[in-house]
Amino acid sequence: MTHRRLALAAFAALALAACKPTQQSAAPAETLPTEVSIVTVRNQPIPFERELPGRVAPTRIAEVRARVSGLVVKRAFQQGSQVKEGDLLYKIDPAPYRVELDSVEATLARAEAALVLARQQAERLETLLARQTASQAQYDAAYAAQKQAEAEVAGARAARDRARLNLSYTDVRAPISGRIGRALVTEGALIEQGSATNLATIQQLDPIYVDITQSVSELNKLRRDLASGELASIAPDTASVRLIMDDGSLYSEPGRLLFSDVTADPSTGQVTLRVEIPNPHNELFPGMYVRARIRQGIDADAIAVPQQAVHRSNDGRAEVWLVGEGDKVMLHPVEVGPVVEGQWVIRDGLKAGDRVVTEGFQKIVAGTVVKTVPWQTAAAGTDRR
Picture (spheres, rainbow, N blue to C red):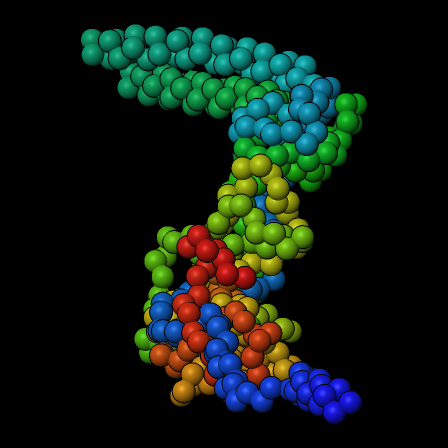
């Protein structure tokens, strides 16, 4: 019995020892810093660009008008087609002008015949005067008759040239090359002498103009910045304008700034800047509204960061995450300018050497210690986003 009690006691002791937790003093695992991608801010030359509204205008425009009166007997062009300078557009009935030409040519022939007779008479009397068988008065009269006949021939030739010109004007031709619009008169229409009837309109569309507007204050500030050296000027023949279409896409062809107007609109305080831009596929039409991204100078020591690095606070202010002393991150307000080539231009709030977080925002809060790695763009072959 005693042995049985001892066995039970030993078994109970072993059971309690098995159920008792083992006390260990293991140290907690060390937490690694959060990894974020950064860019180090540096001064760099960045184009100074403005996005301005504009209207498309033809390079040249001509209204086709008849120079002579008559009945339109033929239209020789396809409406909306491309025409070249000198192409036949309309035909005016030439019959009356052919008759007039025949009449003045007959008058010219008669005047030339009279001139031959007057010249022969003057030469005969000149010979007789030398032999003293004709008087001076007779010779003077013959000489005057010759001069009068010469004048009549000259007048008849001018009348013939005018008749030929009028006959050629019955072919109404294109004054310029370009795209012609709809026909404004049809066959059978009567064109009156001296009327201002517009038969059609031709517009040259390649290249084409875009007239954009900019406020006088902005233009003057730009000129002051260029004069002070804060902005560097660009070459005058540089393609410095890109058009933004209605769907937000960039027009394929770049343009160049030609000039700015010298007169401001008194109602808006704006001046017009004219841009010339290629239009090989006729995608731009006169009167079309576009937005133009115009490069007006170069900021030689600007600061810019990738677009994804800039955030907005609840009140709409722009902010970036900065990596400060001890590799701790903090939010920092900045003043942003335009977006140029996928980067926000920073007007104020950053300086060269600042480290700005571009990736890893979801894993950090203010004061977090981070491990920084250089940000790799997609163009470099590694897009870490």
